[in-house]
Amino acid sequence: MGGRTDTDVLVVGAGPVGLAVATRARAAGLDVLVVDRRAGTLDKACGEGLLPGALRSVRELGADPPGHPLTGISYRAPGRNADHRFVAGPGRGVRRTTLHAALRARAAEVGADFVHARVTALRQDAAGVDVELVPRGGAGDGVGDVTDADDRRPGTLRARWVLGCDGLHSTVRRLAGLDVRPGWNGDRPSHRRYGLRRHFLVAPWTDLVEVHWSPHAEAYVTPVAPDVVGVALLAPRAVSAAGFDTLLRTQFPELAARVGAAQAGPLLGAGPLRRRSQRRTAGRVRLVGDASGYVDALTGEGVRVGLAQAAAAVRHLDDPAAYERAWRTATRDYRALTTGLVAWASSPARGAIVPAAVRLPRLYGAVVERLAR
Image 1 (spheres, rainbow, N blue to C red):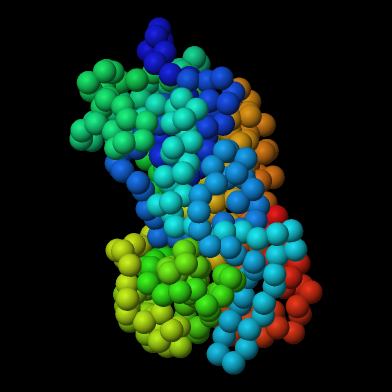
Image 2 (cartoon, rainbow, N blue to C red):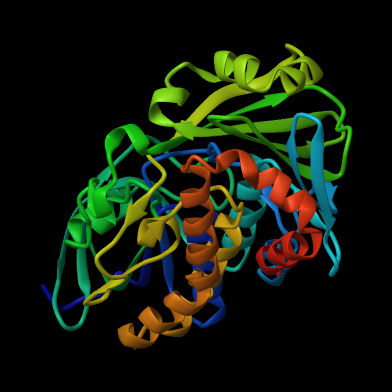
């Protein structure tokens, strides 16, 4: 260990958060190498709504992906709904593949480098981190093309810092010894929540993100194009095991009839959603985004919170304690509101969520604005 350094910042994970880290690190004058085991344009099972704050953050990075305007959020149950429109302007429904392509193009434009490989080991000292990579195929995919790691670099790369932006099942979190076992805090396997997402070829009927509530699941409906809506279903393991089509038909029959059978693209899944890390830092390793900890997708803040963490991680590369403080500040509202809402949704009082939003429109609006900022 020691000696040469191949790059200042090695970013593991080329999703939106990893690409934001890469773009911000390049703006800070650092050399950046982004590593991901997946090639091409990346997709993910998610709601695909950029709330106003998230859209501002994406634009601050120099990207402006096309999509469908989002003017608010609607909580819905049979026979009633609570609607709130954003005060500070619209967000945008953007397909995850579209968002990824725009952010990757921006990262490549500012000089980030890319390698298609898998991280298998980390070893660090006071000056840097040695990262073992196993190449994963051919050359790059057309945006910022690079030659594979084994063609131009040794199997072990040395970086001044490693930023783990590799999602719920983070390899960096595990290799850095920052994982927390899945059953933390009494979380039972039967209660763990999973997400499923599918697109439908149907013209959007609203510019609101609709959150449909049933006794056992939630459905997020997000317009993402003039002729496409995305439907993301969230449910405990025992419920989600029924599969997307059955879950949509049995839990949300009116929605199922409205979107019809014209599906666009594959069915994607994610979970279990709840994740925790012991810390966000270990020496010169930082965890960012879902890799650093995740509560649930219920409040739809994943991108906004992840991009805020990306900015904080680059700003505090030399000060792990400062990053831990900034991480807590950036995620505080998300963790508090989402934990509370998930607890309510998992209780016998679940059926009161939409009626409460209808009866207390000011409180509901204040919560939505807090999430949207």
